[in-house]
Image 1 (tube, rainbow, N blue to C red):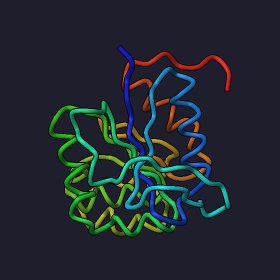
Image 2: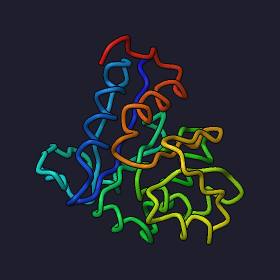
Image 3: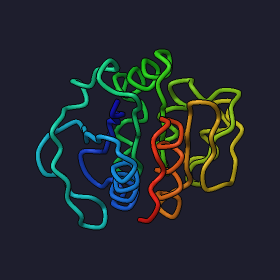
Length: 176
């Protein structure tokens, strides 16, 4: 059975490598990827890359996906205190799905209470928020704590994607 992942990006200024490199690894692993955001259509990343978003984040159903991935970049702050984004993270986790976040996006998971008492990585700028929410901040590229996968930033995108694929039981790609 083909695994399905929804990647949630900001409506602007998402981090290009975190989306595109992670998506490349997931798709090379045979995983079907859907990109969602607060708005649909063409969205530009912080470095000028574009992606066509086909799903509004309010239309994401935990029943249709095996994992949710929150992509970082400055724009991701729009989800930090967004009740629907936090509910998505919680619903996916409570239903036994993989929940992943990279760069500053792990703060969404911390703000939802999912990371309390757990180890997690994130961009250094969010380490204070993580610690204030009871998270054991790890200065590592990627941290896997059960079904929660977090990563530091763009340099970790390929490994981040591979860990998500592994958690879903997908075949790791031979060559990227």
